[in-house]
Image (cartoon, rainbow, N blue to C red; front, side, top):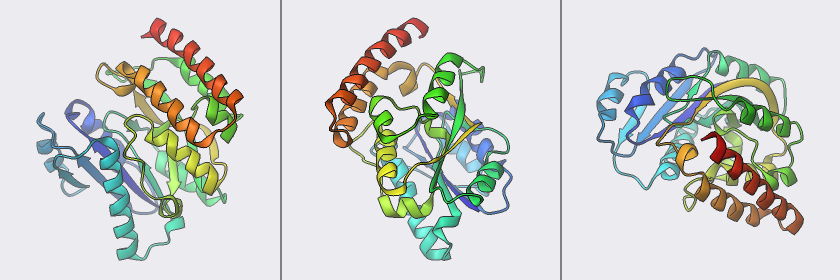
Length: 264
């Protein structure tokens, strides 16, 4: 199996090299096509990317934000598949933000698991780390692990237990569904999960941690969870018409905000 990985980045030099190394250091029987789309950073990210010229593809210019950068990757995926003639079912697509990183042996595990199943996408676990790579918020991790056991479209309408860095999608499904919604600033992934459920069915769920999701002072998950929850509810309304489920999301969000304010 081949891998097509996209990293959107902007002024994240502090973490970017670890992200890059976690991708190019993976072991796989197939090819890894890695793209970094930098939004015109001014913190030295461009100079860092030049250091890895021979191991990845990259561009650095002003964009319209994270979702725009991811969609540039989707466009490059389509071009690459057309140019190479590769079987899109044998290519795993993922995007990894520039403050997150993959854990060792992730690609080799993903290719083995996808080879054994007809599942069109895979959801693995993620550890949560701080700026120093120390594990934090273990209760949050275990809570989401438990809910993933019961994963369904209806449950997704109540909460999002899918950790984005642990998701791998067959390229055939990306071709089927298309780009991420650029109107969304926080929950473009949550919106995509609903689309995947509708067109690609239930994901293969893996209990193994595949990546590290970082929370720090400047991350969306660290300081912008209030507008994130607001946007999440708006997305849920697109796909869930049951008022009881939407009411449960509001209740769950209220409880979560109280908890987050205690731990953050």
